[in-house]
Image 1 (tube, rainbow over the protein chains, first blue to last red):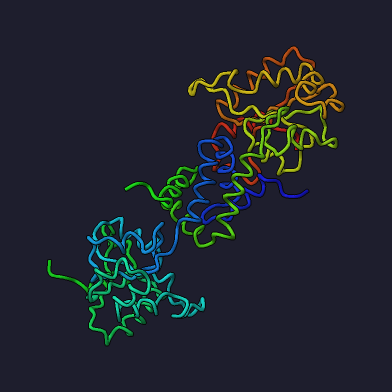
Image 2 (tube, one colour; image 1 turned 90 degrees about the vertical axis):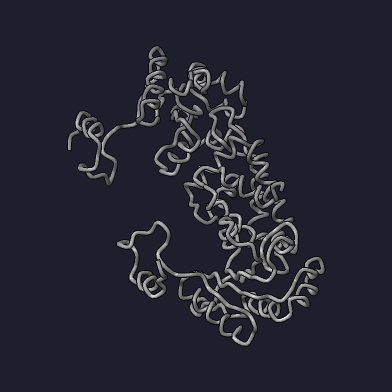
Length: 213
Length: 213
């Protein structure tokens, strides 16, 4: 028997991250009970997002306009660039509301195990963006070239994993000769974290980076 | 700022059962990385299923044809009807492969707390289906009337909860005068279940329904 529309839908849903067969069946039934209010809007929302959302040519963020609204926002500090691995990291930093500079999304991390090299990421784009901000902006879109000045600081907001740290190291290494301050996120005890439950590496790092109380 | 297509999509996804904001964001990014291979097929799959899938007029199951393929299958025993609360229960019983009769989906369970009465469920339809199978089939679709005979057994496959059992009781009560055998699923120790972890109610039921070893 060929696959019916329901089995087809369940198979597609079950392939989404975090979902399995059981949750896909549950979602399919939930949707079929709400065809007009949820199922068709979701179908249209998916299609709309698939055609409307694009990568920002400047920073690699996802938005319905390119350059994205972060890159175009004149209220943000164009002299600071926060380098992150994924678009979800942009969202995570944005949710804090604590950062008012711009971003550069690498699209992943260097990984010898997975065979991800510098050419697979937006690392070269970062270097040319830092080397000649106005030329980079002009090549990508003139709208933001006017407020691009000399970039003063690059914040490497990469995961505290082996891949994240080797990527940070690779970038910092290549930026040594640039007149740019390169910083990375502080490592230490997470807010709300109990010492007893922390791994040794975090405690050692927190000890070494201790500050005056 | 008005809601962009990405925020809109994430909001819709976050409303699905079992998903929250974080998993919805993760799914949205996963989809945007696979627009042609997954996102657009999913949009079309949703739309296709929303228009193609219908309730079976006979049993209430969901299928792309009505009567559904279970009702139309001449190899299945039309003299047995398995009464279940939800379409997902049909799928659960079908996965076992142990049942070759037909189904009747109530669409829920009687619930005094939630204000669900007999008129909110497909209970009357069950009674007319049992009272006059050929007339019921003819009224809904002639295709299956030819193989509908006298219905011999109704299996109440309802949850072992208060609502499930009161629904089973209500149906069994109304079928007393019908020349039909009414059965319910056995209660007892689940296969693979350890006695020590079972609740008292299950152990008492399993003791009372013990069989010769």
